[in-house]
Image (cartoon, rainbow, N blue to C red; front, top):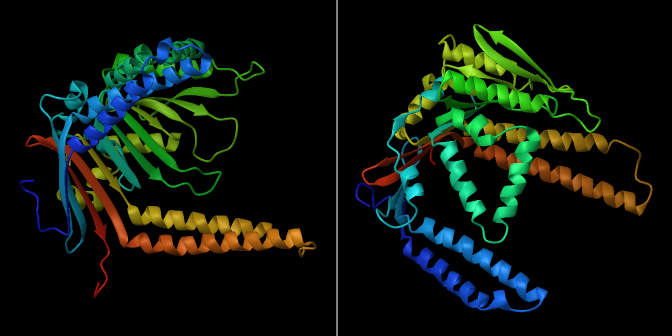
Length: 401
């Protein structure tokens, strides 16, 4: 707890021993419950044995992961501009999962991927981990499941063969250990779903080109039940940057998934316009989220370098949610503009509809009160022998509050 304020408004501390002891007691109970069930006769006994064996398997994984954490602690308090929290996870240097400890102890680094995201993005996050390592770890756990592991692995292999895509060799092997995601704009209506960007550091131009070719090839090769593919993928270029654009057979404004390599990152954008905006930002012709005033102000309060970082314009998200609730209420009101109810059942339905609209409008008013929370940022970094997470929410303070 050194460096944390014990006099803060909120302080928390706990050791992982208690949770681990509980898990071990459950494990021992399941072990006793299993008993000689494997040799027991009858279908019911066999099923019970399989369920108990699977429960024991997952409990072993849980206890192994839990042993990685030795203790947690933190504090939170208000200042003149908002609410800040600092939480720490202390790792056991010997016990637990070595793979999990290695991932959590990654050294702090600069999130360069944020330089691709437009300045006025609604939210953005970035971090470091290898998807290939994680995939192999998870796949290994699935295969060793004593009940369904081999069958699940077999089904997964069959699904990849059917799709004509090897997830490890064709996709994950091309990805590095840095990623980022940004929600650029909100959905305006059901025909305009908003825009987003997912970017992952590529291991090289050749590996990225292979991943794009294999991925788009698998999409092209997937026909409909009538044996015809209505998906149209075109190869286009914007300011010297190649992109594959998927045109859907139904109209959704701005939704044309676009894939390409920008500044060494494999980029998937929700639409061609959004992809082009990423190119403009990478070429410094548009400002990035790292140059945004709100982001810069909160990055100082958290940490711009680390293993992960996130930023969110909370007030904008709250306003969008309130608008969506009111729009849904208005849509229901249009449905109620019909003939006057003629039967008791119709009168009951109309009363329930009116009550639903009232609840939606009340919920919108409650949600709007949360607009006082303006922006939020959080970061995570391994430093000083522990995993330190900082979170800060800027609040619009009212006089006398």
